[in-house]
Image (cartoon, rainbow, N blue to C red; front, side):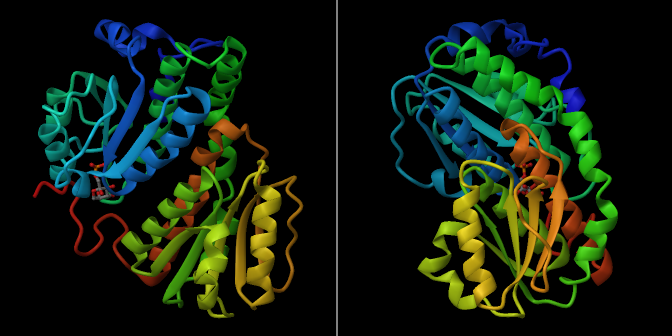
Length: 346
Ligand code: F1P
C-alpha cells in the first residue's frame, strides 16, 4: 500500500514535481505558511506533519481539529496553504472548516485524501491522493500511514523551495524508499505483539508515551486502543508525566512507550525510570540499539533500526497491531466498533 503512495512520485534522489499536477507549481512557489485541519486519526497525521514542515521546510505550521476550528474566528498568515487531511473526504467538520475559510484569504487549499470523487477533493484547489485503497474497517489504519507518506512528499516539494538542501532531500527519499521492506519486518513481529496484548485485555486503562514527533504516534496508539477495544487510553508527551499523569501510575496501569533511537531517547529513558520507580508495567517499542532490556517490570519489543524520517510511520504499525490483538482477545468487533461511523457526515 505504501508503495502505491510512493509510486510515480519519487525518483531515487528526489520527489517528482509533476506528481502534484501543473497548477501546483505556481502555488507552491508562493507558500509561506501552512494551516492543517483534520479530525481523529487524520488530525494525528497533521500533528506529525507539523514537525516536518517546520523542521525541514522552515514553514510555520498550525494544526487544529476541524471540529473546533470551524466555529472559531480565525486568522491566517499571508500566503498560507490550507491543508485538509481526510480518509473519506466527507467528514462534515473538515469540510465545514474548508468552506468557512474560503473568505479567510488563504493562498490555496490542498487536501490529502483517499477517496477520489469525495467532496473535499472536489472543493479543494489541489489534491494529493493517498492511494491506500478502500479502508474496510471504521478505524483508520492504512489511511494514516499513507497520509504520512503523502504529507512527507508535500513537505519535501515545498521545502526544496526554501531551506531543504538537495542532500537532505535525497536522505529523506532514501528513507521513504525503505518503507515497504521495513514495514514487512515490523509486521513479522506480529507473534510477540499478540503475546504482549494479553497484558492489556483485562485492564481498564492504559497510558501511551512518546517524545517529539513520536508524541502524536502515542496519541494514535491510544486512539486505536479506545476505538477498537474500548479500553480507556491516554497519551502524553513523556516529559509531561511529572506535571500530573504520574499520579495515575501503579502496577495496574500498563504504560506503552515508543522509543526510536532519536535525539530525545535519553530524555525518554529518564521519564520511563520514573514510571518504573512507581511500579508501572512498561511496554517499550524500541530501536534494537536503544539499550532497553527486559526485566520483571518492563517488556521490550525490539524494532529494526529505521531512518528517523520514517520512524513515525514504522512505530505506528506495532501500536495498531497491539490494539487489534487486544480487541480480538476481548471479542469486540474490530471492523465495526460500537458508536462509530466510517465517515462522520453530520
Ligand atoms: C476522521 C475519523 C477517523 C476515525 C473514524 C471517524 O475520518 O475521525 O479518523 O478513524 O473513522 O472519522 P476522515 O476525515 O479521515 O475520513
